[in-house]
Length: 252
Image 1 (cartoon, rainbow, N blue to C red):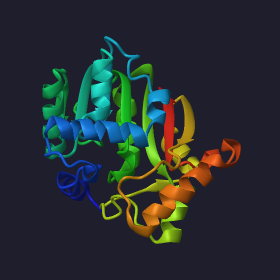
Image 2 (image 1 turned 30 degrees about the vertical axis):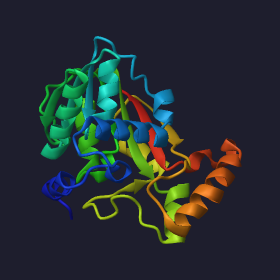
Image 3 (image 1 turned 135 degrees about the horizontal axis):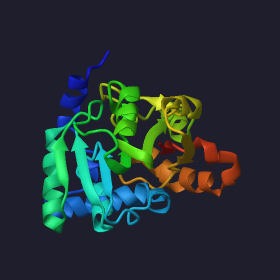
Image 4 (image 1 turned 90 degrees about the horizontal axis):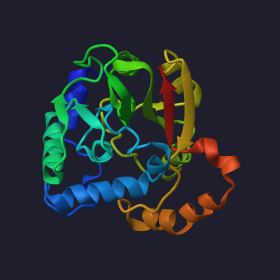
């Protein structure tokens, strides 16, 4: 069984979406490319998450990486805190924020044992971290602990019953970070059980096919030329629950 130290060592050496940029790591062009690609791929976040809705309030991102999402909250006027298990990620986030003249409390910390008192934050965002940690339940419970009563947390995990998981197996194409010490894929029911400590939970399936800049060769051509258009032409009422990402909007 993987430990949190195994997880830390892996993420010290890996950066999400590094392949999409040719700019030097840590340069402004590098961060701009990460932001552009992140919100091309995850355009639904701009519709579902109020990045500019927390002005003057405290926002915590668990697993902040290079700070792409956290910067959006900061630009919206939130008082932001970001933690990540990997020191390399926090260093990148600090460079990203400094270059944009944004303020943040950025710390190397384990999401399964957050260094904050109970009931501190108005909003907690944990996108793309639950599925990679050694003890997902503990991380979710820690996020709930530091959240103020009545406030909201947002979690995202990978949907096992999804178009991308099925396509990956059919095409024998590995998923991103399949070599990580932990990579969980959950059903909607399993995700609901993971968030059962909250008083209200709304789960949304998202992340439907978009053109990929990462995959090349005949598989990439087939995906971009035929599959993306064909899948997105199907009625969302039929395929909506098969989105690759599951987002849980949880009220404490």
